Length: 243
Image (tube, rainbow, N blue to C red; front, top):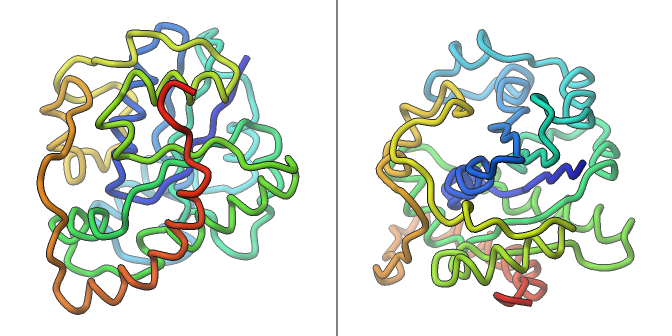
């Protein structure tokens, strides 16, 4: 059994990555296990907040136990899509040493431009770059080396090469089924999917974003500048496609 915790912030092709793994016959995919916990504990407002809290477990200890348990349905790969900002201060993060941790990064200008199209209020905390770097350090210090890091742009430009490198790093074989999935909602989508996933529901695979770098307004540009060093820290370790 292989459990992969993929750590990213929002608007980072994280759902497409979940669809990629979820299309493997041997994989059980879990969409943001700690979302309800984060909303209820932190108290922040989000679209469908009450529905999310009502639908999912928000107990830290039970969620940790479920993350460390075998995947349901007799599957041999357990893919967990985690948002780094759901790991709130004051809660023991040591459970992450019981899984294989990987990190999905994306340039903060593209993250912010995408986030702002869905939600008008955004802060550095909301996009998870600081927390991602903290988790990266925790894992690196335990391993004595950098864990797997993949960049969204590498996934979009060379899906097979980048996913092959990721799978090898995680100790599983690449499966060509990861390159395409059916259009529309998935049974493992969170209840928040209608607000956030409309674009990825139209997809059937990874497609390179050929648009130029976004021109951010001043309030987002300042957040981008604050996030950039955290992105660059992890980008130094990103896997080269096919390696």
